[in-house]
Image (tube, rainbow, N blue to C red; front, top):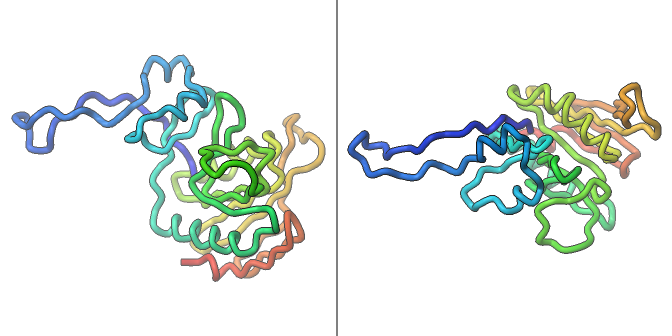
Length: 214
């Protein structure tokens, strides 16, 4: 999924109008720190309970948009399939972030990770992640097709799947062993299908697309 910049909002009054009791505004990041790009992973971990789900992009907090039903159903069905088929020692999960540095985090829709360490972590590191998946929505096309895969590959995550909707189609990518034209590792398309996705890596995959189609 993509992320949209968080803008400061002023205090909000109750819905009953000007005479309604004052109510505090929802949590928002400090606009000065946003302009200075001064946020870090420690700040994200310390966010209050009422804060929305966010990504940290070069020190700036951005909101992860709420998904549509179709988007979430596809992600959930794919998580369930990967949970059943992940290799020994690995697990699939949703809504867990990846910390790619002290000032950058990602929130993939689905990921497969090494099942080791404590279960109370909010973030994984790239070396713990086997596969990341993004389900593309109309508002997230550029980020899911270009920005996030570039970031995942540069961070050393070897496998990336992009799921398009209407019709559901999976594009599977694998990172090259050497830097590409950008000077960083880049993904190359290894398979795509709207019927049956078949792969040998990162583990044997025979995924009927209708099993993840709402």
